[in-house]
Every structure is written in structure tokens, then in C-alpha cells.
Image (tube, rainbow, N blue to C red; front, top):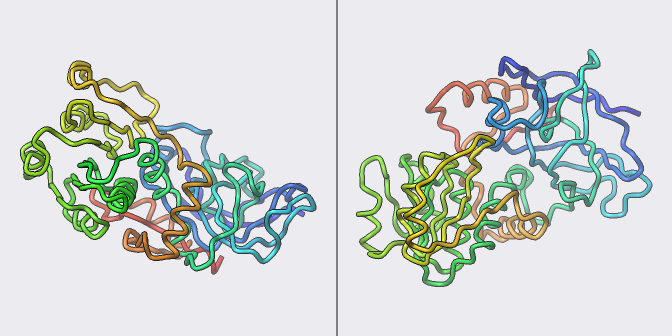
Length: 338
């Protein structure tokens, strides 16, 4: 039987509303989840809203990380069962009451989700001790951990994290845990203060202090590894300049579908290694960050600045989309009353 649900829908005018939607009856290899919380990814989701990235036509239902309880499991499902707490990354399909198809990109901002359990972007058992309201934001720290794992900064290495939004903060925490000397760079003092609590040894506000001069205090020849985590093409050359000769540069941000440019000679002359992490490292990274949240090793609750009831979600999304200084770092939508 199809599932009647409510979802946060964005139309082609970039307006947001909670709409009644219909989800398909779960197939034998799928599960139906009652969403409790969904996490907001400001960078990727609003790139989709603004058509900087295009994963499908409007209307859209964004959101790609959530936690909830399995309500129904198909007969072929063996990984989870009804009543299990899970974390998940997508919603298979939905349509409006009018019959119009909604692009699930990836559709987790919904009171219910239907998904294939155990797929690469499916649903898995939530580790014991992880609060659903924090665990729903698991993708961002996993994205950061994936970049750290790929580039492999070592104990004692000087690491620069250029841009300490959610992904940058995850990089700070992972590198600090490895024993690196971590330098956080941003233009937001609140983000820099949070980076300090996540393990940064030095915080530089690049709007007030020249980055290269400040970095020379601890790394006269440049950093061993630089993570460019702003996702802003205009920041790439300045971040590359912070690397030492034979250092590493990590394209930790998502720079969109349009071509970007960079000055060739600086990284060429320094003979840099470059890394291009994509996605969240799948189950190994997701499981690792959730276990670290449960143990307290990753205090990810500190990054959640806004938790709203699902009925307040359209106003939150509108403010993020239209206000340059919206004050939101990490946001969570509570669907329990839906």
C-alpha cells in the first residue's frame, strides 16, 4: 500500500513548503522508515536549490541524511527489521497529491522514506548510544573523514583547514585526533572558536590577518597538508599558496558543475600531490563517525546551531537561501510530530 507522508518541497521559484506526498509501496528488497530527524547540508542542498548543481527537475525534495525507525521491511530484507533504529541517505521516490513527480535529491526531508536497505546509499542500523537528533547529521563528518583518510596526514604534520564550515570542522577534528598540528582559517569568528574546541591549535581570521604571515609562526615553509573546504573557486589559489614544497592539497569542497581555473605554476613548482575526495567514504566512514559520536570522541552536537520542527523548516530554508548572514551552521529538522 502506498505511503502518505509530508515533505519539504522546493519549487522552481525557490520557495519552500511542507506538502502532502505519496511514497511507493516498499518492494520486497526495500524498507519503509518513519523519519525522526533529518540533517541539513547547507552547501550541497542550496547548490541544488539554486541550480548550481542539477540532480533533477523541480519540484525538489532535498536532504541526504536522516535517522528514524523501520516501520515495514520487505520479505527479502535481512539487514534490518521493523522497530529497528536506522540511519539512511536517500528516499526512493515521491509524488505530490496532484500526481506530479518530485525529484528526490535525495529526498530525506520527509516524514517517511522508502529505501533499499544495505545499498551504498541505503539504510543501516544506528549504533547504540548515538542520539538520533545528532546522528542524523552523519554525512558531513564522514565527508571530512574521507578526505583525511585519502590524504593521510601523519602525526606531527602541520595541517591547514581553509574554511571551517561543517566539513572543515570534521577535518579539524579528524586531524587533531591523529596528532596533527591543526590551523583553522575562516572569516567567521564563531566558526573559528568552534574549531578551537574541535582541536585546532591556531585560528586565523583571514579577513583581518594575512594567512601566509600568520602560518609562518608555526610552519615557515608552509603546511604539510592543506584542505580547501570552502568550495569557493576564488579561494583555491590562496589555499594552494599555503602548501610547502612536496606538500599535499585536498580539494575538500564541492566547486559545482561549472569549470573552474587555477594558476598552474605554484603547485607545479612545489610538486604538490592533490587529492579529490568525493562523497562520504561510504559505510566505513559513516560507521566510524557515528561510533565516535557515541563515545564522545567526536562532539558533533556542538555544530548543530538550529533544531526546528518540520513545520518551521520552510522558514528556515527561506532564510538560509535569501540571507547572506543567516547564522546557521548545522541544522536539524524534527519530524517526530509529523
